Image 1 (cartoon, rainbow, N blue to C red):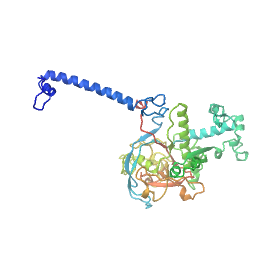
Image 2 (cartoon, one colour):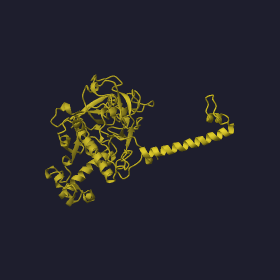
Image 3 (spheres, rainbow, N blue to C red):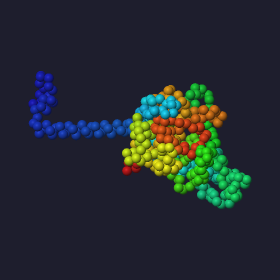
Image 4 (cartoon, rainbow, N blue to C red):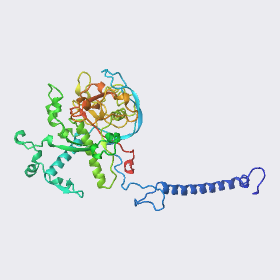
Length: 459
């Protein structure tokens, strides 16, 4: 039965063909477990070869290339308060008539890589964390609470932060340099001078460095250092509206508990970018203290990223909620803006509303239309859509204080509480000058991290 025949069949196949059905089934089961065992061993050895960790960080001993993982553990995973926006392609530009006939945007198909974005606009409470940090750091330095680092540089000793007692006479005497002068006090009250609460910004100009072909130019030539006052300009509530009584908002909006979760306003583009820079350092200082890998930078979204996120996956929709109208089928307004001819409170808010008001779009982002317009990182240029790349389109310019006003224009998106409905459309673009603060412009941050969800996040 096992002999070799001359008809083209080998002995093994002839043997199997002659087995009874029960014996054939038994042999198939054995063969399956035999092959499965080999597969498991192979997979195990493959995992060891390709995914193995070199815990010591030293070079392998066998002379082969195994790869060496970074010494630090992964960073934050899911950023707090942020939503991951999956990569995709959409039609950027207006989806309705250009009522202003500005013709500053043409409809084009672009692709956007994935990123994380704040679910809401940055609130007064969140921005206050930044200003308090700046204020405390200056106070600690004035109080001489510094320590010498191993590199010879003095660092602020944050362990002494509790020693700052803002109402204490001794503390006020030590920080007199940031207190308003006697001739600027009301009833002799000692208050902080907002112009002296300054953040020392240091950024690296990657675009200029990338365009540099001269290797002899030192790295320091691409480091930009600025001193940026960070306190919101509360007087914008009065300055923005002539012959209008808005003093209560100027006095209380940025510091009253009732407005804590409302979007911060009165912040110019430079202050918004300073917040992003501080947020990056604040996070990475914590991660490095835990011996974790530092993350990439928080920043303002590009104009294309903002529009892609606002559409929520509805490429051709006029508004973030997907429809062509500002009301739902029940007649309820879907955003905070200027309805009709000026019925400001009809939508539920006379000025701004909470940053998490109304329904979010399909990505989970709140108030991508209305409430406050939002700063982007992009330079406003009328013909930008004609030459921008179709992959992550962007146009930026680090305008100096001495540049022409035209070079200081930054794109703002989304419309605000004081705008008519047309300004709320996803494809509508506008601009404001980077050193100008308004009572209707805020911002939110993005960060370029992988869409990695930890086991803790899955629960």
